[in-house]
Length: 274
Ligand code: OAD
Ligand code: ZN
Image (cartoon, rainbow, N blue to C red; front, side):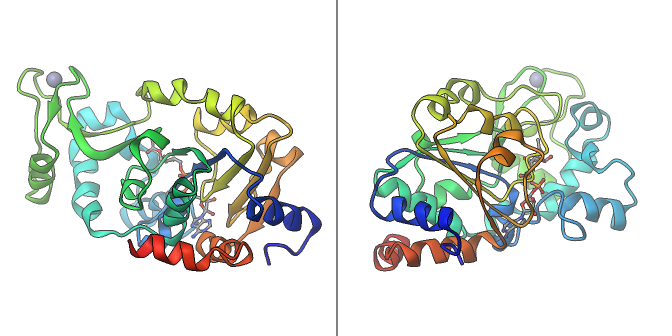
């Protein structure tokens, strides 16, 4: 239960009374598992475990390594073919973030997810930082020329590789950040929102294993209330182990309970239906 401890009661009270005016949300693949998209590191169900067990890959993160992509684009194209990101729908937790925005209390949502479900849940581009890019656009990783993402998807579906017109043998990829690539400028530009504006930080569905995203929590001022909603604790991050409220479990169930405790159910359902 979300208000089972005194810190929980205080958090719910502050949220309900509107004391938090700038809530920042850090999200990862756990937000989309309820939509049917596997995360990366969950044992058995995560992409890396599947690649290891079913495909015998020793180093499954290779699928997002730029140097490997140049040599063997089939690997990533196979993943694109298998996971058709157009098929999925936002989860309750995605809609909750959109709902916070309509209430005027969302400061920013930093996401590591590339599935684009945030935008479909009503979160605006202005409030969203897609730290690892997204699958709505395509480019050449060498010259950065923009390509048609629909054409890329068609090629992947037909087991073909799309190459750059000008760079010999360089395959086209979606504008997602592979290991070895720079994060978008907005990741750095908007990080001051965490240090200067946020009075509450929600961390949902991420293992915080990947740099530099996992250094974002340290930016929150010590007086900022941090709340972790995740299947597993994130105590390897000092700012989190030092002071945060931890709700363990499925994020959709926990968020649903938070909505209920705040008596926001009707407004939330109206928002979701709109
Ligand atoms: P991970 O797979 O590393 O972590 C997902 C976290 O969410 C884990 O801690 C799970 O226990 C938790 N989780 C899963 N489903 C959940 C649910 N329904 N409710 C609550 N918790 C849940 O995914 P990320 O942290 O997003 O990068 O991974 C970060 C980056 O690593 C990805 O963006 C990707 C990957 O390599 C690149 O591709 C560049
Ligand atoms: Zn090129």
